[in-house]
Length: 334
Image (tube, rainbow, N blue to C red):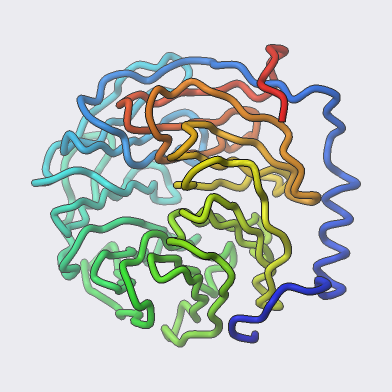
């Protein structure tokens, strides 16, 4: 993979993939979104949201030093977690859905037993905020993105630090594993996206094109594409195999904090910090399908439900909103 290549015509394999997505994508005569429920209980802004593998529960992390586990269908709280000494800035489920990780401004990571609510293990090594967490598909390792310019890879069972990935020239905001577990992708304040060999920690590529901090990162289900959200007011879509920028999505009118890819890879969600909007995009064409309001303050995190029929957004207003993507209520038109 090349480093920092400028966008041009996508390679053949990518063009074929985008054409397939476009052909398979549903035709929307009117973009439709409505609010399904609100999850209310945090006392300060909600920085992070994750949906359990079975889609039944949601885990959120807040500036109020807590994480809360919710029942998605009812919106009720199932448990809350209070071991961090500062705001919770990152959350992630283990693949079995029985355990979860939280990262914090206190530079620590905690592994939780969700049934008992007990902390199982504490991971320390970062010297700054843990801004992102990603669990390997097999659950045997996880990665953390730190505001100490580093990505750390950990063994969740032993608590051992397996390796430290250094290369970013500024704080790292997000990290993700490819679905096969072979690569890690990271993004940070240095405007860059970096691709790493997950087994060795060797840097494989640097993707450049953003003109501001890269705040959010998500990968397609097949691991071929990466979507990034930036303070330059754009969402960008990248070909991870070729190391090229495929397209830039314009529509937000302020910094973009977060991005998610649907389970079928056909659509994207992005959260706006400046315009307080959540926007829905067609991944194959880059066309904006819908935008919707609901947050009174900047949106900080977005996620799809595993069935792709729902979305969650969280932000400065301390509320997590659950949106029904299959409803018949009108959304704002692009």
